[in-house]
Amino acid sequence: MSIKNVRLEVMQFLEKDIDAYMDKFLVPADKIWQPTDFLPNSQTDSFFDEIKELQELSKDLPDDFWITLIGDTITEEALPTYESWLMQMDGVVDEEGNYLENGWAKWIRHWTGEENRHGDVLNKFLYLSGRINMREVEVTTQHLINDGFDIGTAHDPYKNFVYTSFQELATYVSHNNVSAIAKKYGAKKLSRMCKIIAGDEMRHHLAYTEFVRRIFEADPSEMMLAVQHMFKLKIVMPAHFLRASGEERGTLFDAFSDAAQRIGVYTAFDYIDIMRKLIEAWQLDKISGLNAEAEKARDYIMKFPDRMDRISQRIVIPEDGPQFKWLIPATVK
Image (cartoon, rainbow, N blue to C red):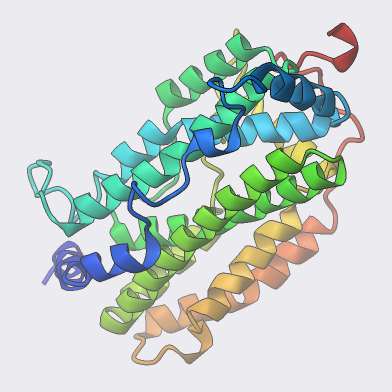
């Protein structure tokens, strides 16, 4: 049987439990928080006072914080790309590329529904803050959706689930750290907003991590090779094609990443720590029944974080970055 057909069988096997996974890892729309729960209420007399307070607190937040928050928001807003990418996986489409109305398609749509709220609430906060050139942000968002992304997974669900396991934890780390910094500067509502977004990301991380764990039980050698492929390829960030208006694809990502590292929101060491956490969560050192190629892949994976750590020790982050078109300096207001 071909590798693709084995993957399809495994996906069909896991699909039988998809409703249970949805009950465990997702929250119904009528019960989960919505963006308006965290934003000034336009139907109350205190609406303008709340906006004024939000804008006053926004003046004290440093530029690197705003750059990171804006980049996170744009990443969340590019959700159409991520949904269309997941909907192309083997097991979600048939051999002719037609969508299957099955459990996996249901999961992706409901996961998308939860994720959509993140960009929605952050976008509205940025707009109300008065610190942001929203047109430039919107141009960048449209470019990011137009440009798509290439994460090296093709239609392979095994590699896709490694990627989502990693990225959901990465977004948890980023939003959680943004929350801590906002709280430090007294922006308690923004802190709470980012904290609850981080909670969503952790639930999603646990779901995709569980999918990979189940695949290891059914097809250990191929799953191990998929993990090695993604680690070796280097798991790129969803916004790796980030650009500003009038610029070429991908030219803004390094400056955004530098800002996130300077302020301690997401660093190279967080990236390495996530790899270690995944190795531990999947207990890769204890997986049995591997063929010779997969055993070599495991050896590579187990040594990889230490190798990356040594490389990261030599990375030098610039003390200052370029002026972003997204940001209006506080002194200009």
